[in-house]
Image 1 (cartoon, one colour):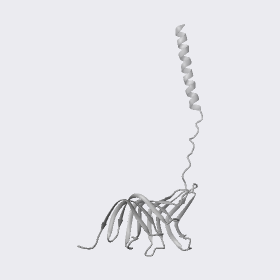
Image 2 (tube, one colour):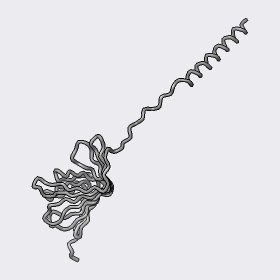
Image 3 (cartoon, one colour):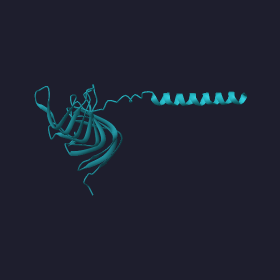
Image 4 (cartoon, helix red, strand yellow):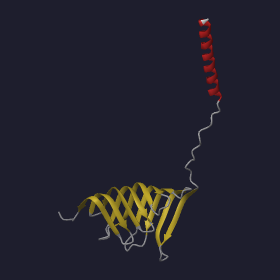
Length: 187
């Protein structure tokens, strides 16, 4: 009798386990909620534009191989060249492989090997500044960044961490850890 009860209990346990296993296998499986793809709303290829100042004169021209705008108001650009106009000597030209335009701001973050070709504000000597990222505000005509950078020109070169510039007033300020070498031309 004890053997029979053990046998019945064991059979009931096995049957219950088999039933639970079958029920779990037959439960409908719902696909995971699809994550929205971060696809652009608009894509513009070979974009060219001109920004006009309050005086109606062109203040900035730009070209990008591709510009994408997203539903949240953000954007990104690829192979970007910007020319800030209105200087007494020559314009400043900024080039970058990529740019990010955050939603809700007038600034763009230039990314990659960012190059600025312009002139020193004090003597007009040509300069080239290289850095990995740089923020640009075309409306305010300002730029700033906190990444390491190098500056080269015919009679001076150097490095720094961070830069701030205003092409309206033709100011360029290297912010910290500034190291400059001046070639005076004397032997």
